[in-house]
Image 1 (cartoon, rainbow, N blue to C red):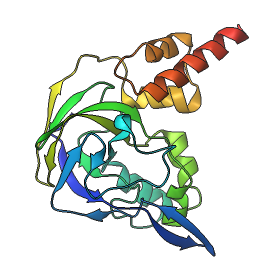
Image 2 (spheres, helix red, strand yellow):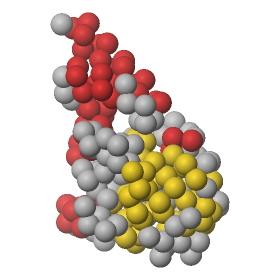
Image 3 (cartoon, rainbow, N blue to C red):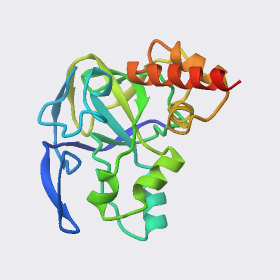
Length: 218
């Protein structure tokens, strides 16, 4: 993993936008800031409109890997300027396949822990006026991911990101997302996810349910 670097730090409150004559309320339209305090509830000045996919202690901070932007730009033939996914931090050197569930990072004055991949929702397509966006993010599992906050503190775009602890090198964010979003894999992966104490509670419950469904079909 290359040394991580913050490309953009962004926050935003829920607000309305219109697409194809319909109005939507979302906090996806975030704006760049020079500093924000990260508490256990999230960044100061940030907000959520859909608690099903965002917010809560296990989803206090959202990251999206900057390396994916050129891929989406080429695929959809349009320029995409962060944070089109509504992420709080756009970062290089921390792709889903390079980061493990439970990893602990120091970002500026805060200490955070990787909890789960992001569950993509239709707002991604609507906000960016790209109809297949949701489908492709879902298919590829290039979703970005969330952190819980272990120590509160301020973050700036110049903050260093330093890996402090990696206790598990078996389950990456990407492999967890592939399993949960696509119910992909045998019962072993779901049993491991369900027992992973550092995985977000919601995803542990999902893994347990999928494991039970797979066992029932045998």
